[in-house]
Length: 163
Image (cartoon, rainbow, N blue to C red; front, side):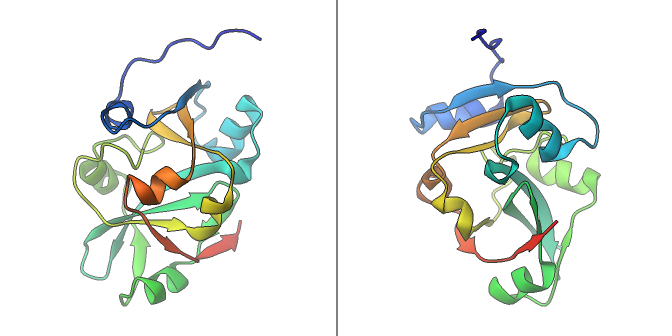
């Protein structure tokens, strides 16, 4: 097995280290619009265990983060019903970047520029291990999904839809 190249620190890895959270580094070759299908293929990981970090906004244009399985989409209607608010929609890329401090495609829920409510698809918490963005395009970190609720304070929701 070849040794994976060391990846320099990001706000996400700094946050994980500061909170004493064990994680593994998984760099891969970023492909524009490749998404979780591309990263899971390159890393040999089930796409269901690759978690995407989505920056959205509610009806008052307040930002929020949704963590979802790579092979699922967010039911915006169901999410709005559960959090509760009138509606939820994805932020435009430049708005998401301004809120999170990360480039779209490299957004991590750890080390966000701005404090935002974070919601996690509850079925993610049942997985033994997940891969989630480490704060840079082409870089995932592997960790225990319980970190999402215990250290990050993510609130479980059930809003997954098939792709």
